Length: 374
Image (tube, one colour):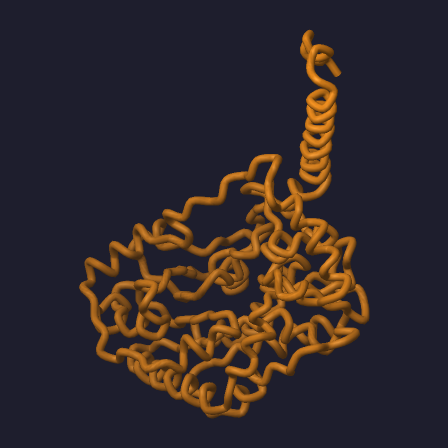
């Protein structure tokens, strides 16, 4: 190490301090460089078209990272709002990130599987505004006459299961209206994620380099990392994912912490609201499909080696209720896939299901969809 030419002229204490300072700086920078290069950069420095899931990133779980490349290889694709050509469509979908390719990777849109399977036109639109529910969005489409332009035979509403009872059970504005021009403008210029600025890659020296070893230490003693992370971690009885930590389940904390909010009364109320919407659509010749995307924890719970949380009763409350709409039971469909030994139904590192699940769900409902389209 090259020191200043007058280093020997410094007092002894100053020279010791100077040397100690340089050594500490080398250790500090070296630590960050090593942890960043070998670990945290592989979780945080991943950009489109490459993708890894949020659960691995926020939980700093490198061994569960499932690296994937965005591509669409199916012969038919859905139409997004910005590309809508004004012609009639067969199926209209609306939903959250599950309806907008949130899982990333190959063929992330279940709508592409629908379009390919039924050889039909599938249009995906966003909810009208953030404070307008999916049900109210469809009501606005009805009242404005927008559905007379689209002329779908099926409307499919999707929602992650943990949010379904909140979205569907609340009081709905059944008189909601909006101008046709406003709705058409929203269709053309409001695609998923528009205007969202992606987080920049952090510098080499950053707090994630401390969190990486700390969180992995916490998980040795607590599946919730002592509530430091939104990623929970539990062992599975068998390998169900194609990653290094193939027998580890990562899931979002609200999959477990929100279970106590799900009651029969809430589920009955949301079923009543969906029935009412279905009855409004029937005179227009439109069938309503409702697809709650099963929570990852709920789906994989029977395969856990040990379990600390309650059983999610949502689907069990929902199944026996009388319905005027088609209920897409994703929990039953995907449970059969897991029981037959299928891996990667969900991505190991993500709250979203994979194309394996999209394919299974669409194949299960395709006969009914073809019947409703004819």
